Length: 352
Image 1 (cartoon, rainbow, N blue to C red):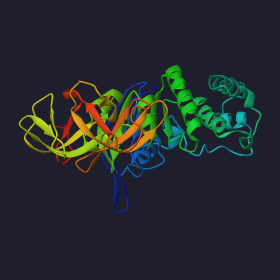
Image 2: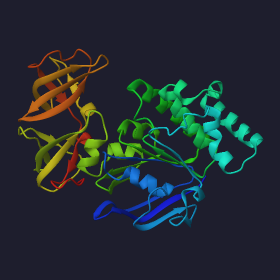
Image 3: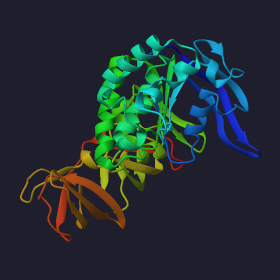
Image 4: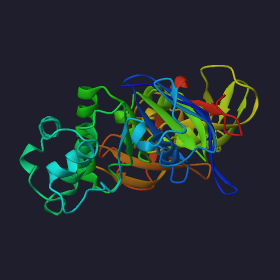
C-alpha cells in the first residue's frame, strides 16, 4: 500500500485545458472516489496517475516519490478498465497471470497468486474458461483479479461498472465493497454514479469542468455541500434548489412562503436548498403546522415510497412521501421542515 499525492496537476490537449491545477492527498489504504459528469477530467486524472497520460504541469507522487517521468510499468499501480480489456484467446487463469509472466515470475508463484485472487473473487471454478464464456459480472471479476495478483501499491478503477445492467451493478458494487474491506489497499475509483461514490468511498472528490468542487467523506459531501453543483449532483432525487431570498432572518421561497433558518445569513437573493427526504408529509387533518403547502402536479408511486412534485410559485419542489399517501395530481400537500434542514447558497452558487 502507498500514499498518492497530486500537486498542482494540470492537463492540456493542445489549447484545451481539461484539468485545472488539482491538489489532492490520498492516505495509505484510503479508498477515494472521483465523481462528476462526463468530461469533468476525472478519468484523465486517473490516467495521469497510471502514467497513460503525461501531466502538462504539476507533480504526481506515490509513496513520496515523484513518478512523472516513470513509465507505467514502473509505478507499481494496477488499473481496472471500463471495458475489461481481457485477451479473448487466453483462459481466465492466463489473463490473470499475464502481467506476472511478463515480469518473469515463476510458474509456481503465478499459480499461487492466481489461485489466491480467484478465491477472493469466487471465480476459482472459472479459471479454465475463455472470456467469451463469461457473463459481464464474471469478466469484471477477472479484470479485478488481474489487478489483485500484481499486489500493487495502488489500485485504479476507471468506471468499472458502467457497462453492466442495473441489477448487476448493485451486485458488483457489493463485491467491490467487500473486496475493499478485505484488502484495505490504496484505491482511486472513478465514476459518474453518485450512488457508487456514496457507498464505496472513504472520501469523495466531486469534480466539474476540470476543477475540484469539494473533497470530504460521503456524509460531509451530502450534509454540507460546498456549492449548488455538489448539492444537485449528490443525491437521488437531487436536492431542491429554489431561487429565493433571505429577509428578516427567514428564507423566502418563490411563492412567498417564509421559513425559519437555523443560523444568521446575509439579507438578499439566495438559492434555497432542501433535500426531498427532509420534507415531512403531514396527513390530512393533522394539527401540526405546515411549513410548505402546495398542489401535487406529478405523483410517482415506487412501492416503498412515492415521489411527489409540487408547484411552489411556478417552481418544482420534489418530496419523498410514504407510499399511497398522495395518490393523484391535484391533491393538496402539506409539509413540515426543520430549520436545520434548509441549505443556503449565494446567487453565485457558494454555500452560505
